[in-house]
Length: 111
View 1 (cartoon, rainbow, N blue to C red):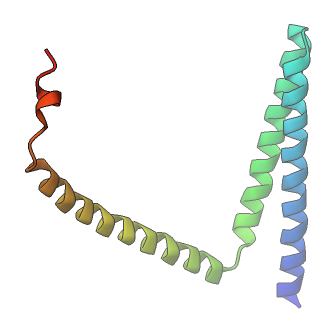
View 2 (cartoon, rainbow, N blue to C red; view 1 turned 60 degrees about the horizontal axis):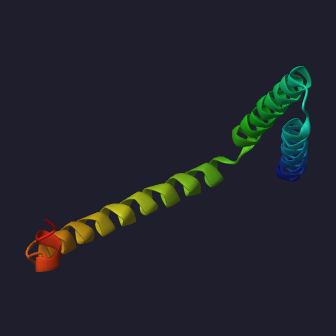
């Protein structure tokens, strides 16, 4: 029952995050069209407030997230880093072989 309650709570938090993001976009779009500088600044400050509210909701979501999900996310990130490192060593080997090829004459004789 607790897990179901957490899922419902997280779902509501995600909806609130979306609402704040939509509101921020509306405020920024409105600020772009307003010619009065004071009104534009007020709209941009309201948009900043929306960002702070979104970040607060996102932190709540992250704190409620199940530890298994966190472990899976960390494992996925580590796997991605390992894949990038492997690709990096392959790219280094490829660069070494490319360095052995001299430049064509039309590139070296630009003067």
